[in-house]
Image (cartoon, rainbow, N blue to C red; front, side, top):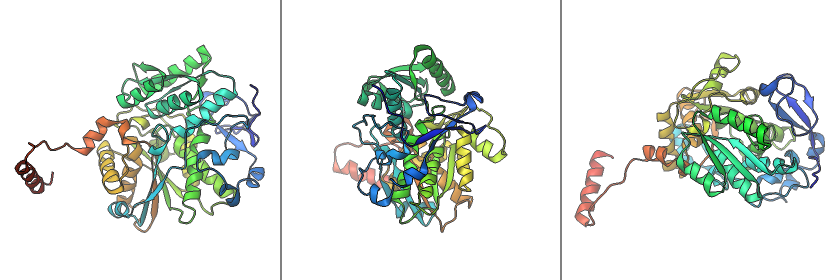
Length: 419
């Protein structure tokens, strides 16, 4: 099948040298090499005539409602799975506990494979089909992998997934149930990433890795487009995002900027990017003002355990555009965020999914975010994806004999110990 090029895409621009290339199956800047991350450019004047409050009111509540702002062909067959338009909850109890005037949670665990990454993978499988590939691959610590496996199954592509040995078993199981070929690499995420790239070149697979594939970020930006619509009546002062490779916060920032450019919002919230202390190379680059230095990683937040992030320039550019900030949190703070997000907000997030909440708490303590301000935290993945970490945060059940006396004794002990 011959596909029509995306109507509103005008080219791809390098973040380093600024060169713009024609639309096509291109990943990084030929002049700048693998560090030359490309950004998709659009004809916003034409898009502005089509995306209006009135036109959006007539569209389906999923991320395909922004089709003009996505690099997809009009010939593409959209996957049947419901992706995007995840709920935004206003949670006063959580806001009070954290110390902000108002707090919203956007629950990305409601996507088909229970994470934010479905937004990117849905674009990835369409680009693979458009460019004539029958097989697609990616390297991932878990969520990008499971989302690609699920979306590939939905559209009929073969998928090869490279994961580091430490990938949580629930995520690996999710890959296998979708029929993906799973390759557990004896090494780090960076080893898996490099091997995946080499495998794609050797065997002719489409490379879904959002670190270097410019189209995947466009799927991630739909969360920013949605926030602009969902919070138009009460735009938060801050949007808080966990950060691994940098493309998630970079994409969300781009989506918010585009909605302002199109006149659908009048201001863009400040971005707070949050990394784990055990994987903080982008925070260090933000603080130093220098180029990123790769690091080793050691954190329970496996989905953001990236020591050599490819999209760090995009992340820092978007944060700087909003006069935002970056912060790093400990694993203990992440576990506490898992507890309070679930117990006060009713949303069960995996460690990387609630790292933003941990960062919000620390930012309030350090007075980066003030008590009179409002915030929206994106919970990027469901807690069932990492049961081992959830068990650390949750505590243990009480074992009792099947008698009323045993129940009363257990309740009395619990009240006295506070356990």
